Image (cartoon, rainbow, N blue to C red; front, side, top):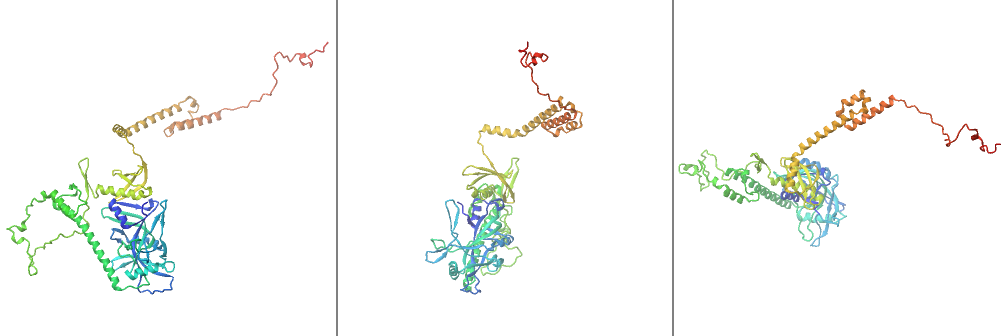
Length: 562
């Protein structure tokens, strides 16, 4: 059973490790993708806490817009569209006794019954009311725009407020997980960013420690949280927390620059050795920066070591003044000679480098270049297919791609069932189009394959010949009907002449029906049907009977005559 709840990091890692281009829309599916966005719950220190109140107010920073550290992105307009769905969602928690004997929050505690139906153990401990004043606010310290708002935590129906107070006293916040239902997403292969196009909120879960380990369940999205508005926290503690967040952001930016630097290094190496991506015959995607340099040197080093006409001019005896100027031991600035300063490190180019692509030699000898590698395209469509159908069908599909027809054939690893579906491509993003249709694979010998290919090649000509034969046969049948002797009596009528004129638009059977109707009408209008009088019923005389014989009328036949 696949997980119903993922984190955005899970979803991003899935697309990066198993495929790179995805478009998903809930409009074409029966369900949505549900993900967790770990955040924090904040509390306003300036508010007064009333112990007699039946509820406590928590101030949420749900999630921020634009790109996140885990390379997911939510645009401002997408977030604004989703704000109404956050009202009246439940605030959930699973409360248990931890290893230290304290009541604590756990995480998303889910089990499955024998039919693989999910069983949720979290219970509502509050809600986000319609008076929660949800809005986008810019955080100066974190330099991010968050969706913020208030939530209600019920005091006397659970131990939630006591647990929250303990977290706020110790660290100033409580981690939460905001549950998003993703209605539409897109993963861009060249930018490697998971873009959330449309979503809605479905719940918020208070997070504590992992059952059995007492390890804090940490948030994944920078700076999102919830804190009580009833408990104060010192400024030094908050400053320390913000310092840790800023340090984490700097580390993430450093990692991002390192990744970008590797791409730039590849482009610089191609330029240095005078080659392009299509000249690279070795697998470079999984090489480290040092390994990449060594591989380029080993493969293209001979060509690069050939000196250019003016190479080395800066260090030759004829140009002693053009060499590198030694550093002044006293640290004084060297005089300005008017020459442009030499940057010891290559500056990072602005903007993203040109994406590394691949080239294919066509049958006519031309070279066709693509921005994505064949592996990228395969991975993108493979993951698009399996994201769309894999969980629903409870299987994993292998795919065959037919780019000339923009079609993909998917075949189940479990039962061999196969389907075909069209796909579209816009830049480096892919989407499935229309409905998939079942297809079947037939195993044939080489001779049978040749015969089938010949049949496919000759199919058009065979179809034309068959159509010509059928048209000729139909025309002969029509002509035979129209020249039959039985219709000679109606041949001079206007109706019959009209049938002759438009015979090409009728089938042979239709012509026969029309002619029969005309003939019947002709017969009915030209003949009289006089009814004959019915004969009265009589008696048939016996043989030898003579009506004129008087004795025949004698009752006793004359036996009493004298």
